[in-house]
Length: 265
Image 1 (cartoon, rainbow, N blue to C red):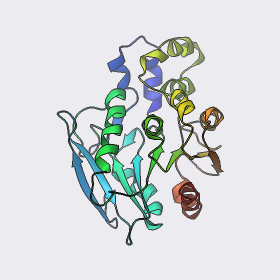
Image 2 (image 1 turned 180 degrees about the horizontal axis):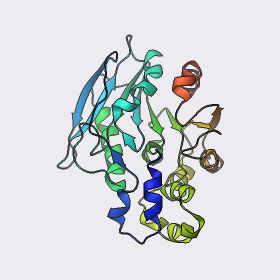
Image 3 (image 1 turned 135 degrees about the horizontal axis):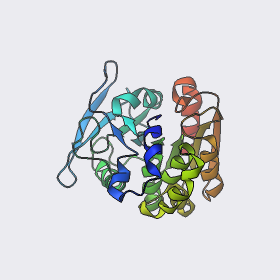
Image 4 (image 1 turned 120 degrees about the vertical axis):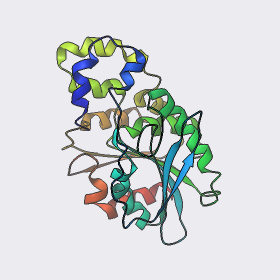
């Protein structure tokens, strides 16, 4: 996530929409070891590209399924440890590698990540292992943008939304890292982005939302989570924990599962 520093130096320069995508996504093709995890890799085919996902399976019959969108760096194997507490608690988790990440092909952009989220949600429901189950959406860091955008248009069919280390918008994260002199240029480019969490979340009214954030978060400021929470009109709760960015699942796995369970009740 500290790769945001790389685009902070460039973001004040007037760049094209397609160039701006390169400042936010940092795909890694190399899978880390997956020893000890029970999962199935499943491929989907939007347009000309291939999307790789991993379906992490509990030992017992799943009590619900979770569609998981990870952050801007690494790939699914970096985030599988964060999803494992949910799997151990009985959830089935479909983790998505955006285009260009892991075994997925193509190049990630704001536009195709947003459209792929909807595509994968629809395809996920057709999987025999998922068909008929309640579905929750989980976004981590940069993945919260896609998660919120998907939830806005599918809230009546989803069971819950979890936002871990949420960004208020692409613009807000750029403002966090850029020097004050660059802020006017950054704000002027806000309309270039096809969606933003702080715009989408105000349209969600019927879906319970769990916010997870730490005041010690050095990568996505706690204030961004607070900003989204204030804009939320849906049933909501905010879990503030002590630790680093996205560390709640590792540090407090039982508390995480208790709070996710509450969304399904």
